[in-house]
Image 1 (tube, helix red, strand yellow):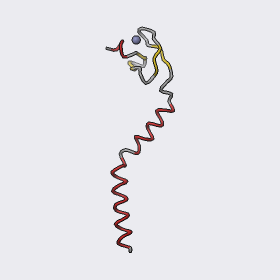
Image 2 (cartoon, rainbow, N blue to C red):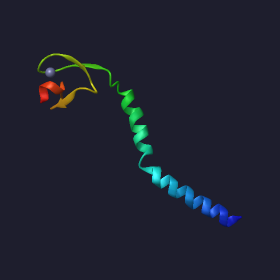
Image 3 (cartoon, rainbow, N blue to C red):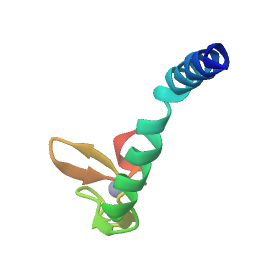
Image 4 (cartoon, helix red, strand yellow):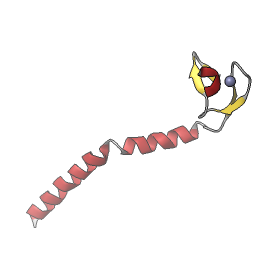
Length: 69
Ligand SMILES: [Zn+2]
């Protein structure tokens, strides 16, 4: 009975470690959502309004992908 509990605990730790690297990413994703990815910002070059997630930040200024390329 105790042996089963130990095996169960070891398997549990292995599963925890296997998914260990992935759990922080899930929490990070929810943090990014809190930063309002859909907030509109103005492109520094062409002055087009784009969302933060579409923009590329260069030297602290927002650019649309067309202006960066
Ligand atoms: Zn632009």
